[in-house]
Amino acid sequence: MNGRMGALSSVGTDAGLLAPAWAGTPAAAEVTDEAWLQAMLDVEVALAHAQFEVGLTPASALASIASQAHADRLDLVALAHAARGAANPVVALVAAFTEVVAAKDPAAAEYVHRGSTSQDILDSAAMLVARRVLTLIAADLERTATALAALADTHRHTVLAARTLAQHAVPTTLGLKAATWLQLVLDALTRVRAVAEELPAQLGGAAGTLAAYREYAAVDGEGRVSPEPGGPLGSGEGGGIELLAPFAKALGLAEPTLPWHTVRTPIAELGAVLQLVTGALGKFALDVRTLSRTEIGELSEPAAAGRGSSSAMPQKRNPALATLIISASHQVPAYALVLAQCLLAEDERPAGAWHAEWQPLREALRLAGGAAHTAVELAEGLIVHPERMLANLDLTGAAIVTERLAVVLAPVLGKAHAKKLLSTASAESAASGRSLTEILLAYPELATALTPAHLSDLLDPTRYTGAADALVDRALRGSGTARRTARQSTTGREVMEGRKDD
Image (cartoon, rainbow, N blue to C red; front, side, top):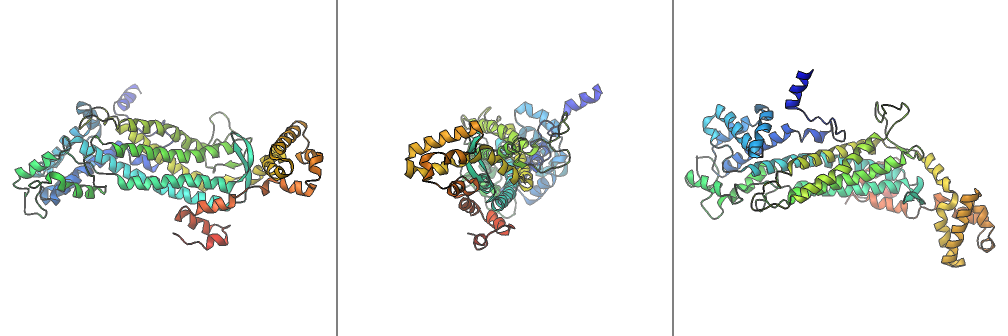
């Protein structure tokens, strides 16, 4: 046993044993060490491709480099250990990858990593990994938005108590509550899409001047190394700038205006958008967790074998999905803060700030990806208990709609007097257990102003939801996906059926 444990500890693994918020989710697979290594190799291939496009790398060398760029052909653990020597994994990667290419095509090995620097490779790989995870997150946010739009439309008239500062306030509808969740998800989705489109490739060389690329062009003889297609590089004023467009295109990333070795906006923006994603989903999950409390019981999570079970209490079914999302929401802001602090990058290449980004970025990506994937299951399977909502409305009797009565009585009694009278009557009702209607009808000044029938109508919480219905419609107009869902809902209205997508 000890020998086996010793062997495991020398290699280790990160399967998410202590991170159920992301363990086993699609995003987790995109940020493994293997995924990062493959992304770095993809960048090396893109660099060779870009240099081929401008006439600096022969087609045969590009083909050999591309054919060997597979993570499973390298010793990942050995690379991880060797990374300590240079404080980054790219130096060891380039040496090992060059050997792999040389074994197949010695001439092609000369074109591996030509003119580049470690930060070009790792930054561009980070953008590749981030784009892949953001694509997954966007797809999950779309599904969550679709489910919340359907929930908002279906329950636009399902009344429950709105709570402010943890206390009953006035009636609202589950439809409006779901519309609020929907708006948060749509806001996050908009930002995720925008950031994903803007992720830039990184190419600058040792200090962001592209000098080595230009120099290689001169060595190769005015930028032509073979009769392959592509124009010369480096002979004109542009220097290595001609590489930027084909390099970014090969990676599917945005072309950078300048090398951004110390302009860390893309990384800080990633942290911010991932924090927005988990914050938006965390609000949804927090509401679900609260409303699923035993004494409230207005919502519950979808059931599944083993989900929410307790190791000690057989009767419990904990809100596991909401818990996972909230857990991620608590963690990502700390990682986003680290990424924002790394904007302080000295000189033309920083020592420490750049290196501090890698692990926080990975954690933020997989936590946000895990939260988004979990939110789909929670939103699509959320169970609503309208009868508990009505029962909870009765906990404070008619007091929950005294705001309405105060407005109606203000012209009769004066605003201040009406509020004072209703506060006194509500306190008496709570203390005595007598109905608020009975107490109010005993006030002489109300006897002539309100009939029992009128008072009963005014104190009906289901008849005081304001513009909730119209607000739900406004939220459903917020996205084409949400609108289509609302139209397809079994309770969709004619007004929803008649709308056209923008």
